[in-house]
Image (cartoon, rainbow, N blue to C red; front, side):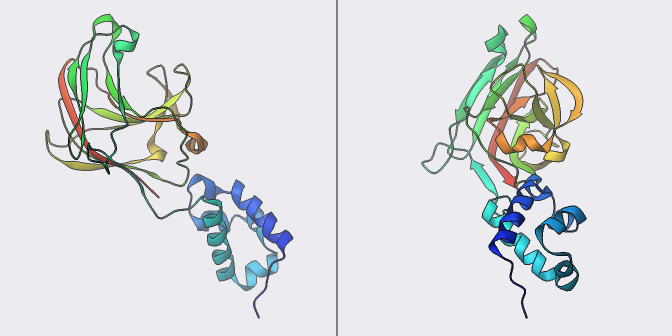
Length: 237
């Protein structure tokens, strides 16, 4: 005979799950078999009697809370009506640098090109989203389809509008110049930076709940021409 949980128990379970590892993108098994959390979700005898019911309840709660998803979130670049062209150019010019860079959109991509210069303490170019909140805590990482020439790059995440606060990035580079490829970056590999300098810390996954800006930037201390063309950016769970 199925065991039904009372509304009080259901409410307590939701609260527990909201604070559980599920919100940080960990697997169900890791959260479910954590003894302290499991006991706050369902009675101990139910854990021993019917583990399959626990899995079912956890899936329902996670879906309701919006902390688990199998559906990727995709940013598909291009100037067609159904494509994204909301990213903007940001280079060392904002701090007195003289790097030349241009952002253009084709029918199916965003193209960042330019010429990196170290004059006036510059040396970078990037494209970024406008400031707005996005919750990425349901995802494990990001895939980028791109082709590039003459530079290494990084995907960036910001959780503050204040440029002096920490931001986070993960580096990537093409295996063969000017050839389409897809790279996979896991959030577990993102590192913390402050004003361009590494702190040596990994990104705290809690920042994923309130990201305010995404970006792609040049990330190699090398002057000269460069280009990167991006087809899409896709967050996966």
